Image 1: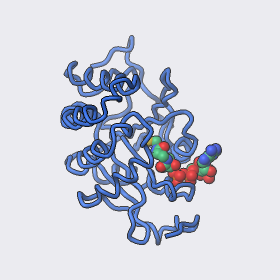
Image 2: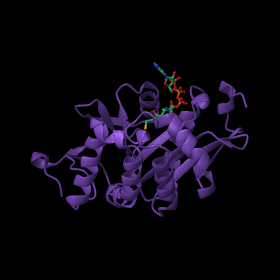
Image 3: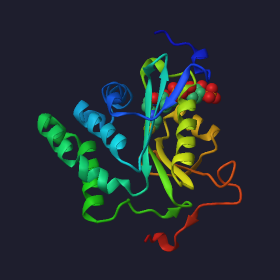
Image 4: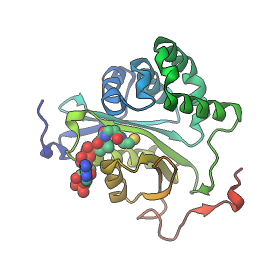
Length: 233
Ligand SMILES: CC(C)(COP(=O)(O)OP(=O)(O)OC[C@H]1O[C@@H](n2cnc3c(N)ncnc32)[C@H](O)[C@@H]1OP(=O)(O)O)[C@@H](O)C(=O)NCCC(=O)NCCS
């Protein structure tokens, strides 16, 4: 199927929750979108386990865009605090993926990510330390991606907007969070156009974004609260 810019029209795109039978196609898309990322380098077994986890997790939100019956992307998210259960449930898969690709033990980025995940597990805290708070409950948009040939057609904005709406209607979320890299121009443009606000940027160029549902633009009448001395509960 050849996709054109007009394919973004509401008629042709069906946004629906992902089901277990979509994992195979969604895995291909995950690898196209994130194959070179830290998680993507763990390979297809990790991508499958990741997608299955969100589809099976009752509190999670998943969404996919279908054009003429073909799945062309995915978006997955879960309420803040999901990380601990996610890390614990995916640990056996991560270990199997690493043992199947021992060269990954030499990959500094992957080792750094593993240490981060272990810290979340061992600290018995469900989320990494935060110095800024948005209204809770908060749902994290954990991953969103399109098949390569479906990009640049406006489908990404449809999927981000659909994910927001799904969170608003299917969960009691008062805010959303997500992280993108500063070099990711399409994602940043879409987030800004949908009223998300950048919260802070880490030393590696990853920007933490938020959107508050209580207000139209995401922030008027509300601004992030900084916890005193950077402490957290
Ligand atoms: C991020 C993603 C979902 C965006 O969806 P998309 O449909 O491809 O987005 P588009 O190509 O329509 O681009 C969105 C906007 O960025 C602009 N844009 C894209 N590339 C650009 C560039 N290199 N420089 C400047 N602007 C750019 C587009 O013109 C568009 O702007 P507009 O809405 O003002 O017209 C998709 O690119 C993707 O799957 N990327 C890989 C995975 C990923 O990065 N996920 C997000 C982070 S988790």
